[in-house]
Length: 287
Image (cartoon, rainbow, N blue to C red; front, side, top):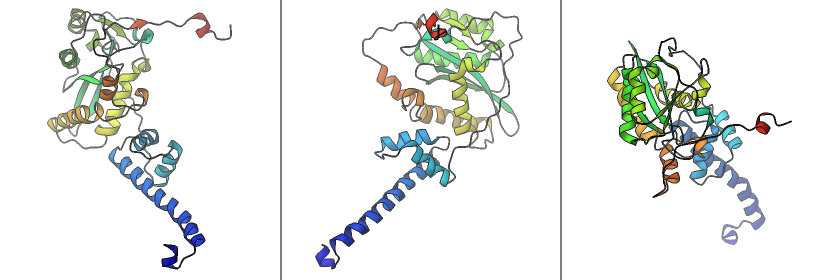
């Protein structure tokens, strides 16, 4: 080929070594840009995991440099508005979730409520997640912040999962979750109640993390004109993207559905979660 083109072999190889990395870099940059625009809320770690799935051997730092150079790094907005009313006469329950060692789905459910602002009104979203797989198993969107809102989400979760006695349900100490109606429904399923301590939102961190993801990747990315439009897009995000497609670093960069399919063992017996307390040497490692 070099003889026909009247080019020396040394010149050919020297030119190839200079061109090949540029073409590879351009291809990688194109894939990174398209992935970042398709998944607006993904950081460089998740984008690197997606590229690895597609056969691109790009490290996290390299992906981060490309995103930074193209001004495509995800922007995080942090804003906290309390919606929990824990000043009520109902019974509160101790935090059991922090001492559970999970090994299967439907051992621990976590629940929470958040608000969503539309153009002319505020609406509220109640969700129930499986803490082991992070899958949304029940949710409900409503205009009133009453006990009926989380109750509808709980009924959806019960209908889809059919929990067995021994399940632990964790939430904050809000009056909606401590109400007699909600507690009796859980006790009727044989579930144990668990609640976070006051002013400690991190004790329900898995649900808080989901709400952050929902708002960053769906709610804040659109302008909703009506309640019906919001409900349609939330349902599409949860059913088509979050549960089936979105990667979770805590799940080894798998989606909740992929993770549940990988841990399910045909014929395996379901057991409640076990309690795991810190031992003396774990609390005081220097002693």
